[in-house]
Amino acid sequence: MTQTLNLAVIPGDGIGQEVVPEGLKVLSAALAGSEVTVATTSFDLGAARWHRTGETLTDADLESLKTFDAILLGAVGDPSVPSGVLERGLLLRLRFELDQYVNLRPSLLYPGVPTPLAAPGAIDFVVVREGTEGLYAGNGGTVREGTPHEIATEVSVNTAFGVERVVRYAFAKAAARPAHHLTLVHKTNVLVNAGGLWKRTVDRIAQEYPQVRVDYSHVDAATIYMVTDPGRFDVIVTDNLFGDILTDEAGAITGGIGLAASGNINPEGAYPSMFEPVHGSAPDIAGRGLADPTATIASVALMLDHLGYAREARRVQDAISQDMAERAAGDGTDAGTSVLRRSTAAIGDAIAQRLG
Ligand SMILES: NC(=O)c1ccc[n+]([C@@H]2O[C@H](COP(=O)([O-])OP(=O)(O)OC[C@H]3O[C@@H](n4cnc5c(N)ncnc54)[C@H](O)[C@@H]3O)[C@@H](O)[C@H]2O)c1
Ligand SMILES: CC(C)[C@H](C(=O)O)[C@@H](O)C(=O)O
Ligand SMILES: [Mg+2]
Image 1 (cartoon, rainbow, N blue to C red):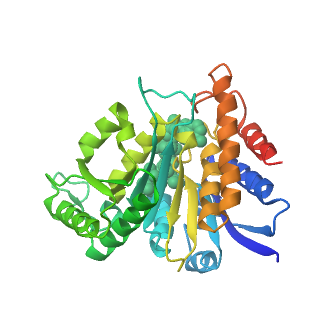
Image 2 (tube, rainbow, N blue to C red):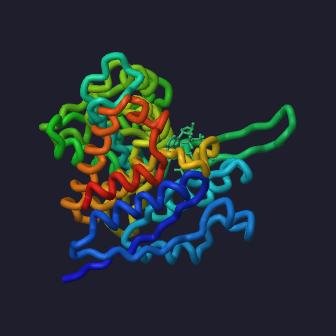
């Protein structure tokens, strides 16, 4: 029986416009000849729309997006738009309104891929970043703006409900992986209120998962271990901002940010989940075919897996691995994302071709 995957597509800004077509190219190749057909609907959201209409994400856009099976997003943010307008008004609004409370960010070091680490060892961990609370919640304000007495607050919101649900997801993830290891990353030595809630929640849920080894690292120390001993990590659970920072670092140690994939997941399926590369719109390289689309293609694999197409997800992941092996076997200049010998589209073509 034929199934239709109704996919909303938000290319967004900068290199988002370049990498998303490659993700779609690989998605089509992965599903060719299968029972699944993809129906895509592109949403004009981002800087161009904002300049034209002043809109970031209307209620009508949001209601429409809720009707899809999943969303594929490139990146948002542009130097011509005041900082935060698109990031908060579009991207974070989507994560919040669609209750995508798990921001899943896997990191894998492909064999032969250059890394700044001297002795990287095997790197294969996943960051479960809380996606709807913390310092991102928008709980702040500015008084006496522009005066010497200006006061700006940004208060981190951590609810028992919000922390418990993401911690439960992380424990289930750790229990399903071979290493059975969960690390809470926080800053309990200073952020005693939020940190206390996170620590107590992890300790309590740990009782239900005796097979999972649990440890804790302050976030500052975690940034050290990520470059000195990344093999110590299996599943990391952390809050919204710490997870944002750690996952850019995780991208940098595993071949570059152009390889790092993510899923903004609503595990219950009440709303569509949204898949996007970890990176942003990269205005410094936009429009020149220099962006590595692999992160977007790997995000497509996460999406397929989330939607229950595990076999197709595996095939996309295998095609990426093969492409990475070929890159690593070359002269080395194409193995990470800092220097690409092939264009954005050529990498998409190569990965799609491996899928037949
Ligand atoms: N999810 C998102 O939509 C998202 C994520 C991060 C940043 N942003 C926004 O993007 C804009 C630029 O932010 P930034 O410069 O801090 O971060 P960025 O991730 O866009 O770029 C950081 C560095 O990584 C490089 N890079 C990024 N993606 C790459 C790729 N696929 N291939 C090769 N190199 C790549 C860039 O050239 C740049 O040097 C800002 O407006 C920011 O708010 C959006
Ligand atoms: C653009 C910004 C809102 C976003 C975040 O901080 O979550 C980005 O940095 C990311 O990592 O997806
Ligand atoms: Mg980020």
